Image (cartoon, rainbow, N blue to C red; front, side, top):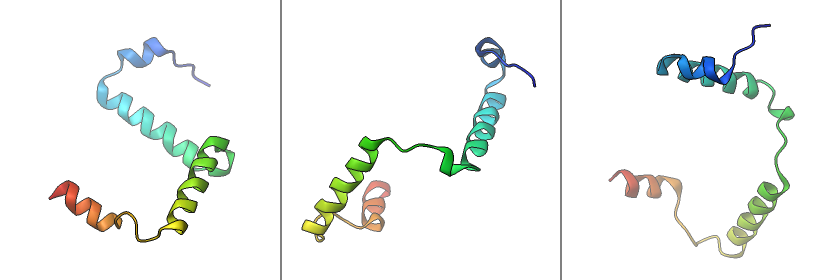
Length: 71
């Protein structure tokens, strides 16, 4: 196994560093079940879902939001 230090990475051209990050991310994405979701993320999602159920007409569909942002 090759060891890469932070200094080695800092010396790499930007495009190579981007590729390294993509490769690392892809290796993580291959095993999504091994990535632990913090409890506070789950709590936030539960709160948002409860807020949606309490008032489903509040907010905007993603399509409309995207149009406002890009338009």
